[in-house]
Structures are given as C-alpha cells and as structure tokens.
Image (cartoon, rainbow, N blue to C red; front, side, top):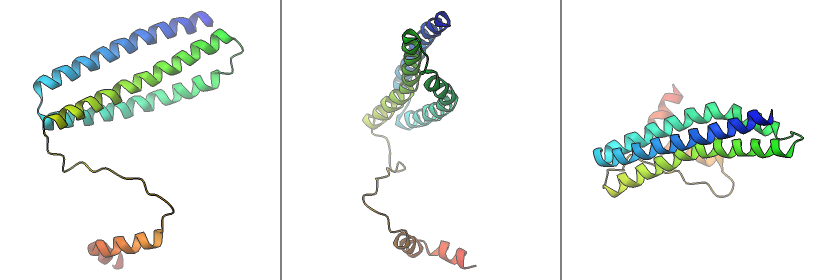
Length: 146
C-alpha cells in the first residue's frame, strides 16, 4: 500500500509539473496573440475549466481526508502530499486566470461589464432589501402583481 501511495505521489507530482508548464505556455502564447477582450474570454474559459477540475477533484480530496486516519506515519505523509498536489493543481488555474486578467488590464480592456460584489457588513434587513428592489425594478413588481 505504501509503495502504491509513493508511486501515486511521484506520478501526480510529475503531472502537476506538466500541467503548470502547459498553462505557462498557454499564458505566454495568449499574451503574444490576444487582445484584452481575447484575454478576458480565455480567462473565463480557464475559470470554467477550474470549476470542472474542482468537481472532479473534490471526491478525491474527500477520500484522501478520510484516509488520513491511516495508522502509518509514512502513509499519512503521502496522503498529505497528495492533498497538497491536488490543491496546487487547482491553484495553477487560479494563478493563470489572475495573470490573464492582469495582462488584459495592462492592455486597457473595456471592463464595464465586470461587476464586483462587496460583502455585506452586519445583519441584512431582508424586508427593506425587498422594498428597495421592488422600487428599483417596477417591471418586476408589475409582473409579480399579475
């Protein structure tokens, strides 16, 4: 079992290096070829790919977390390494997306379509929030009245 874990760690570490290298090459090529708008579209595709990868990795990570109760110290070490590699795999997506967005910003793209949510501080008065939205969007209120 420990030999299989060690082999899995080595293979996953090599796969992670290849994964990071591919994303670095993609970033460099995109930087040479794409406009700010193209970089934004690519960043969105990377984000979608990250979501897909996270969906695939989450069951794996949960299984690894449960396996941490392994009685062997060496086994726990390998499992922790596999968890770190999995987290790094997803971090490659986030880092690439951030680099693409920063490159697009440097190129002066039109970012009026990007909205940023801000966290709410304190308790939310949902009744007041509803009244505010009803006042702000009269067509919705009319549709609800029907």
